[in-house]
Figure 1 (cartoon, rainbow, N blue to C red):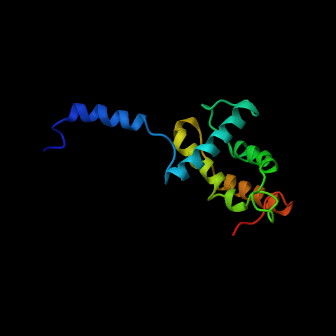
Figure 2 (figure 1 turned 30 degrees about the vertical axis):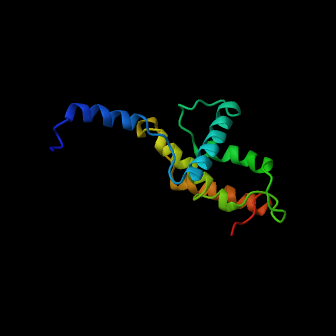
Figure 3 (figure 1 turned 30 degrees about the horizontal axis):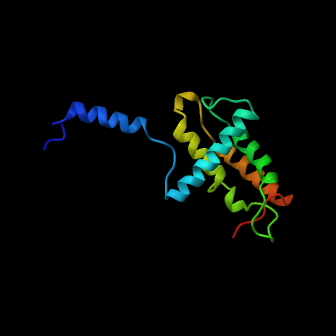
Length: 138
């Protein structure tokens, strides 16, 4: 069978597949976690910051909801006052939201996080740790 034998049908099928892609990767429980945080982030942007989902977000848009959320989240561990930096560093939730932006917004929209953005987000995490609002992870 030739790769071009069903070109017309393959074109439509592949186009549908690409249009149906949704952000997320990993196991089902990991994807649930990702959807939860993306939905929290998006809801904060829409209701608190009054920004549309279609409008690309900035680093400040990423930090602002988490700055509020860490004061509202209660830890399940008695020894930790709140969530761990492990959950909020660039490999965790902040990184997840940055990846969501890369997945969602085309380059033409102007969405782009820079090395400076990453450093400012890390500075926020460090400040939250120093003030006791976040604690170091493992």
